[in-house]
Amino acid sequence: MKLRTIVFTVIGLVLTATISHAHFGMVIPERNIVDQQQKNLTLQLSFSHPFEMIGMELAKPSKFYCLADDEKIDLLPSLQESKLMNHPSWQANHGLRRPGVYQYVMEPQPYWEPAEDIFIIHYTKTIVAAFGAEEGWDKPAGLPTEIIPLIRPFGNYAGNTFSGRVVVDGKPAAGQDVEVEFYNRDQRYQKASDYHITQVVRTDDQGVFHFACPFPGWWGFSALHEAGFTMKAPDNTEKAVELGGVLWVYFDAVR
Image (tube, rainbow, N blue to C red; front, side, top):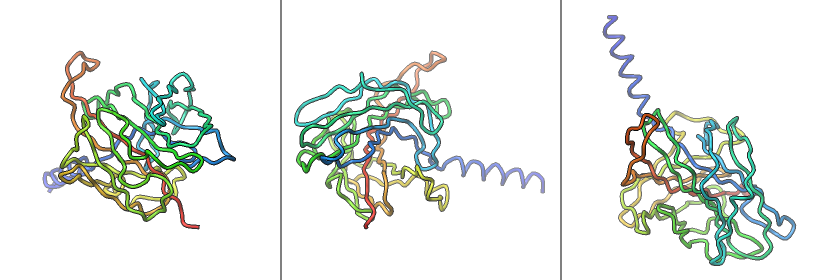
């Protein structure tokens, strides 16, 4: 009986360990629509498990910039050290002066994750509309991997279905898993089970996926794949690299 108990305990632990708890690069502006009364935008950059509100250390990003009307604005010098979820993060302020659709992009330093024996690099972006403009929201940022929205990524209600296309090196990524997670910053929602923490959908032959966001707030979409190169771990051995294309989209409550 003791042996049987041990066996079932081990099996239970193995099954529990297979449930995915995703990491997400995060670029979260205080709002994703800017008007004449609110011209200055604060953005928070972090790395975390957003639904569980478990923070991870984010070293100063390699790059942080804004794309708007074929202009690339370097925002890296504006970054200031901050703290989110009790871990180091970064914060930036950007003053918007003209109408446009602004893509904010973070390229982080590689993150070594000993628990998974891999490096993680999440190319993370979000899209902000300013002063009534709405052209260019589906323009690629030219990242090694990214999610291109197929619906306008602002002015959406909770319950709307988000659609996006995953591209790797500019080409559609077929049959790729996309992890979806809610930024539960007010800790308003509780998981129904461990499986509900991170939702998973898969792209079709054209790299397209769909997901209906059930409640208001920030939703992160992360398309992951293994890079074609390795990096040296702290023990000087070569380790695999996980590349992620991450997009954050806000869904409003109906008033």
